[in-house]
Image (cartoon, rainbow, N blue to C red; front, side):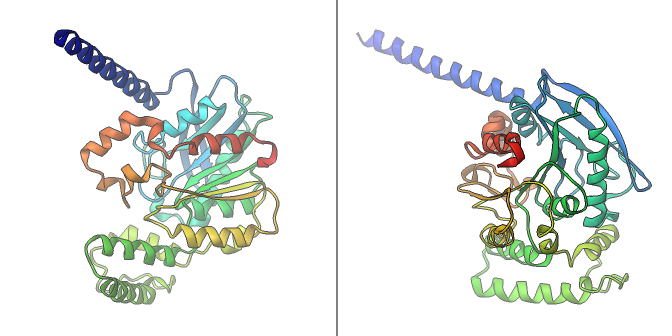
Length: 342
């Protein structure tokens, strides 16, 4: 009897391991583009050639243009976008995503761009994708993360996307920076009083420098900042998306993770709700237990991906699309496919 019980326990354990292995293998496939039509597209933005990849499912219902957040992002965000892209493809939503300027195959330098420049680039990408015969007649719009929340409202005010999805967007550049810095300092063990003092002092210093965009000289105290990065912040420090939110065309879905450590999700979602209150086709959602990028907060809530320990990187690969807060990706895909986003 004891031998039988032991054999049953062993069989049960092996069955669990086999099931786990199958689960992991299935999720790892989220980092490959299978059963999709993949092509390279080039478009012109100002004086720069920008290059990206158009990925279409066999039955295309809609297409999203991915608008990157901050940093030197290639078209697939070092493969980090692939679970999201595969989830969209499975729902019949195609994706166009491109290398930021100066990254991968794209010319230029992304650090030379203002948010207005990036909006102009997004509109050039929109026009290029709409030229594709396989896209003709389908709805095409924007989906962007974080800093993309300053780009998309401008582009949707100046152009005519069929829809816009904004994830983890901040309203005001300066306030977002203060919130981010405050959480970073708290995470380093500072007391609330120390955080308040340090944030105030840092932003008084920043205001004197970056609050005057015509001053091109980096003063003492900013020598550690790369010149290109300094100029980038100088161009964008006064960015506030409020005016553009009022004039966006097309349906808009704005989503935040309630545990966001990069932007003040409660405050910014409230601003969106107030500005969208009299407009149709607008939806504002706060996802519980989700991060800045809508990942599971209990596993992946860091301010930067570079802060992930190695085992969290492996875990993300093992989970694939299941690394996202449950139901979130399906909700976004369903919203995109609804007529007029309603």
